[in-house]
Image 1: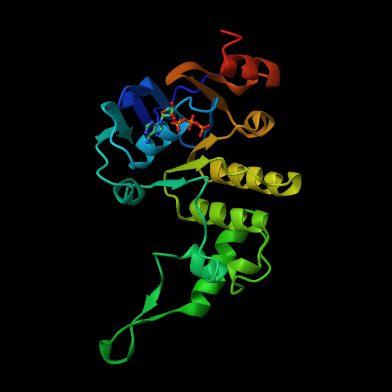
Image 2 (image 1 turned 180 degrees about the horizontal axis):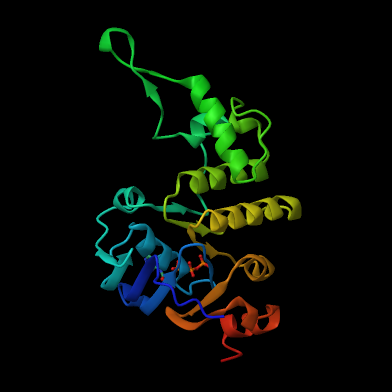
Length: 252
Ligand SMILES: Nc1ncnc2c1ncn2[C@@H]1O[C@H](COP(=O)(O)OP(=O)(O)OP(=O)(O)O)[C@@H](O)[C@H]1O
């Protein structure tokens, strides 16, 4: 069934060139609340460029961006973040020397007022408990949130990074290759977190080269090829072969 509800987040006819390279050519994409959209394409298809425009990290050369139906001109990633658009980049990493909870709250620490109104101190216990609860809510079991991140496995770290993104996100999350380099069990955990984000009513844009993951967890798939959107269809229209054919251009 086609979802006719209004898009939560949308880009229309976005173009972006780097010198003579056209990275995005009139690309449009929309995500609704409680919808998971898969964004796929071969290396160099333009996915990262589109993610950067969505995240407010890049100003497109032309095209429009709408959040809640209102046109936005992101001046910085911070502005997009403040408006409720969270992005987790492939290369994004946690601060290894800090605890799980400090990472969950990084940049948004809870500060209790100090004595005589002087410098506040971080409400460490409160953050540990809240970080644990936040991660549990999205299905991530981390043994102790006061443990340094350096003591976690790669998969656990990735799960914490995604958990942090999902628990803070208010409207939209963009996950750029979140299952990259993860084992089967860890990937399953990440896919479960994506489902939790959907259940929370967030709009999710999920970028991955692992087509079975895309097919498993998305509602709709958008295929980019050489900077153009060549297909935007319900996930039920695809299997691995047709999706691969669309990405490579052997189909469509
Ligand atoms: N900073 C840049 N300067 C010049 N060209 C760039 C720059 N960033 C990307 N490009 C080019 O723009 C095109 C799209 O690149 P982009 O990184 O968006 O693709 P992608 O789909 O994310 O690829 P991958 O899956 O390999 O990460 C490519 O041809 C790439 O070489």
